[in-house]
Length: 190
Ligand SMILES: [Fe+2]
Ligand SMILES: [Fe+2]
Image 1: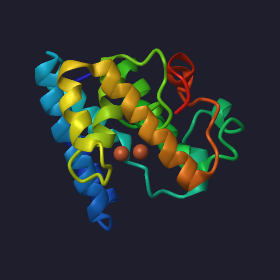
Image 2 (image 1 turned 135 degrees about the vertical axis):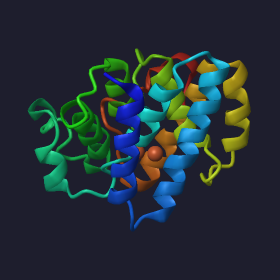
Image 3 (image 1 turned 180 degrees about the vertical axis):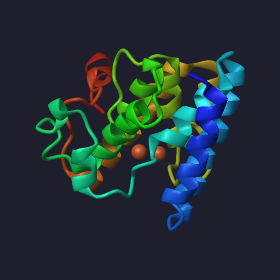
């Protein structure tokens, strides 16, 4: 696949889809900037990192029927009671089918950005970190986590997962079984 071409198509689509959601556009741009900076630090492919950023919330405001139509059939039951997470799955699906993204690291990063996943690679971990620490986010620890990510990626990932966990509990009352809670078992309670 051609990363530059995919990125350019994706950006056009994102600005169209989110035209009534300027705050979300700012968030995505913030995530893209963080991904770019972190990619330089860790010697990663910047275009690939940008694709991940621009894809991750692409379907955020689509309807539940849209999500259910655009996810792998096998996941329908898994997420029946957790609509919040569906945008991660439908964005990954659109990435695979519409954009023909054949790099599974991109697809996994997007698919697991709400829950984390113990086997996520560096791109997936950096998306979760960037999703929490980009400058438009309200989290108190955002700046600390941003700085931490330059020196200790794993610690920054775990702190980001903890914030996601707390925020999910606050807004959704329940935690999906996919959630990467393994880090809590290793290090004690959240
Ligand atoms: Fe998201
Ligand atoms: Fe996001």
